[in-house]
Length: 241
Image (cartoon, rainbow, N blue to C red; front, side, top):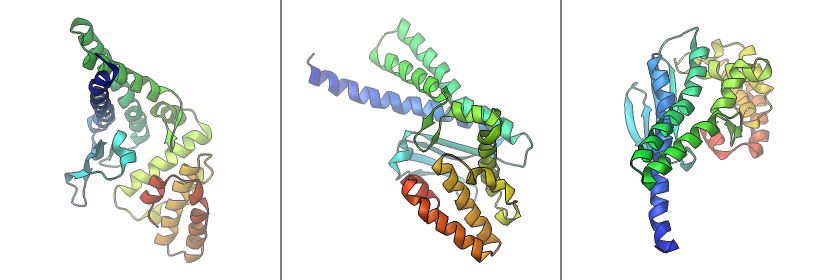
């Protein structure tokens, strides 16, 4: 078999195995959330997505942003729960652990019934799980393992993760963001990671808008505009001004 024919066979196998591995990983996150009574709000695998609409119904849609095609899963509490942060930390680990378990299963199948598909699927799943458990900065944010450690490590890291989670959790209930306290935003405003700082000022902008505080709203908007050059387009598009 020449190299060209091998690549024609290998590349589709590799893409399929990656897609399956990413699906398993994101389902791992989602299943832990659902197990704890949370609602699924979004699941994206490749260009296919599921999201919860304004009527609280799950619908299929085509995801146009290729940055998200690698896989995204999001669940949120159905009701206010004092254990939400603890549950969220478990959700972070759900994806990597599910990937590793699935990878072991696939490699076991490969051991008894060897073929390239099971080998690639097993290696990709295990690799994805291990890499996501490592405390790394990945693109615009942090790996699952890094976020889990930040949530449990105290200090500024824990404050940033808790602040972001509280604001996002609160917004899921459709409540007036002005009912939050200014202190709820402060950890994000001091974040080292530009994308987290941008989120902080974006939600602060929304906060001042809801409170009809035009002066502080204008200041927050100016800061956001000045930060844009350091912020990935995916975040700027998400935070519509």
